[in-house]
Length: 123
View 1 (tube, rainbow, N blue to C red):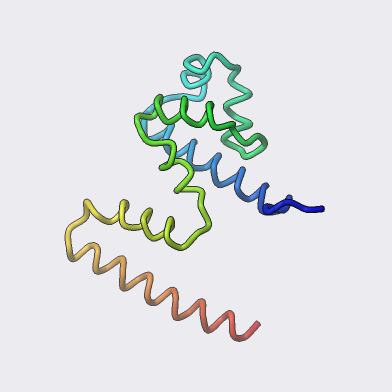
View 2 (view 1 turned 30 degrees about the horizontal axis):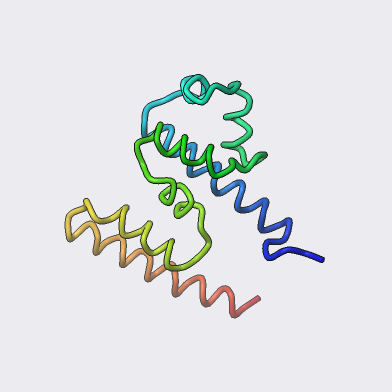
């Protein structure tokens, strides 16, 4: 019997969480070595997490969030495939921009959406 999340989805989730962790590490201007030292683990373990080879447990996720000075939910939200979480992420990204820059991004997203819908219909 298969669980709620199949192996393919689990792998995609691991990769997405790893990317989110790597982005936060870079944003925090930390190396993998520095993160590993703070966690008390080896550099290779941090690398495996960031590459999506290993999904961190909840305790490790909270520790990473503390190191990066963000919420664990932020790391998970960046990795989520749910539209609401993705919308929140876009909002976070564009909020600090000027109004005309936000409008430019909306125009680009709208154009891409129309194009992608057309290409989906052709397939």
